[in-house]
Length: 284
Image (cartoon, rainbow, N blue to C red; front, side, top):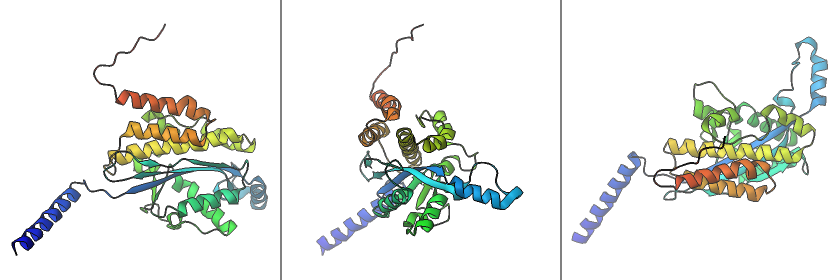
């Protein structure tokens, strides 16, 4: 009887400690982010037909999202586990229309999402364009949307749009604009040039750009979730691992070798220095 009472008391104590830790935010569940980005080409023939049919009421600028076609895609996953300071990072995938058509790229993206049904789809500004284009592509090709993209509410917990999450009611900004302010390397080519690079079939530069967006978005996500207490993370080491995985995926990337990995290495080294840091003055 005494042993039974002691066992009950121990269970009650453990339940109390669990509830206390939960209230204090110390109990965390595994969290997986599916970070992705896409780049587009335009169906200019379809747009020209629309312009001709609508006359003076048509959109005379660049084609808008119904005429977007997926020309490149990149993604990776970040899995944060309780009691670990480092996320498990998958090797990034990079696909372009150099070797694949739009349907195949979209299908492979959907298949990858299908293997991670609990992952939170993470983008910068995906709600404004990317998801609309992917839903349109799914309908056009007879593909089934993954669960994360079927929910149309922008507030769904299945997705995280960091442009909205970081700014809330502040003015919406572009990814390179945010990264410049936050000291994160991003976009090797200017944002407005990517469409021309796609049409010129400069696939190496397009691949570099789409992967760069995924890397920058991943860094923003790690910082954002850590700041909000959603994850605990050794950020310099995690970002260094991210750079290494990216270089494995795209070993000829000038952005990774010349910008992202040196930046990650410098952050990683600086985080491990102790005491005063003395720097030589720059040469005149």
